Length: 133
Image 1 (cartoon, rainbow, N blue to C red):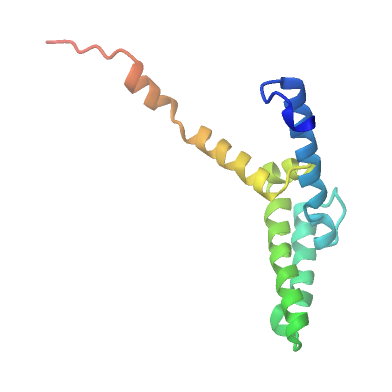
Image 2 (cartoon, rainbow, N blue to C red):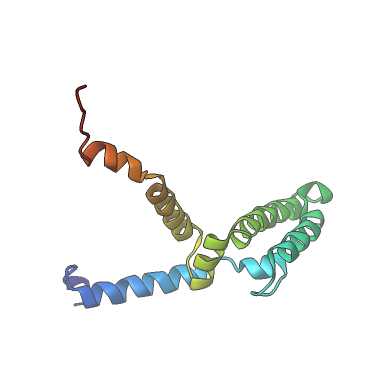
């Protein structure tokens, strides 16, 4: 029975994680399509295309409530696309197949690691000798 696999089995766990990753990858929005650029577009090019798209999609430009709701959703995705595709770390994670949540988890972890100041460690664990004069 497929439901009775051992969660400690690293091979099965690895396959399960890979399937989950592929499912999330398939569901994520295509930020390159949303912006309307190629996968090798430069940051200035992405920003320029973003501005063009933002003008077209701005919810205030539409009268019908239905179209306005659609435009708001696309506008939100457009902002996400800009944020991810103009950040080097986020873009490389996205290109590897990570979705927004997965990218955010990794960025948060990297920020936490960067905040751990090595000097803190020295103060706590290092030996400090005081000399009496």
